[in-house]
Length: 89
Image 1 (spheres, rainbow, N blue to C red):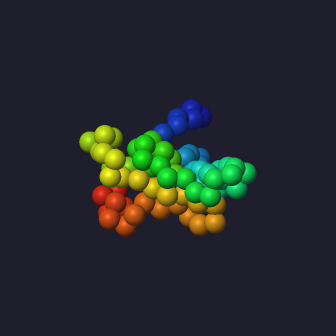
Image 2 (image 1 turned 90 degrees about the horizontal axis):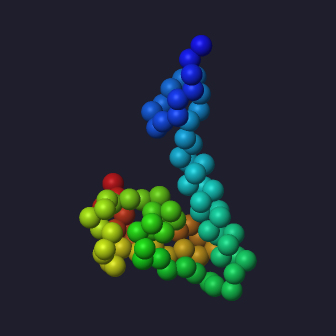
């Protein structure tokens, strides 16, 4: 009997990290908190917040750049501006 090993590689005998679910739940959590608050939107410049909301990452070289941001509001999906999303791919 094999031991469970958790990692990012896919296997056929167990479901590991469900990234689609992770993205959906993060965005739902942001929308829910925005709906409960008095804020209409959230403008994020911190790379950790941008990555959490948009599920994009462009590496540690951009950690000190203020030109990367995202806007989240309760009625639509949070997205990084198109020119910034290209760097994430």
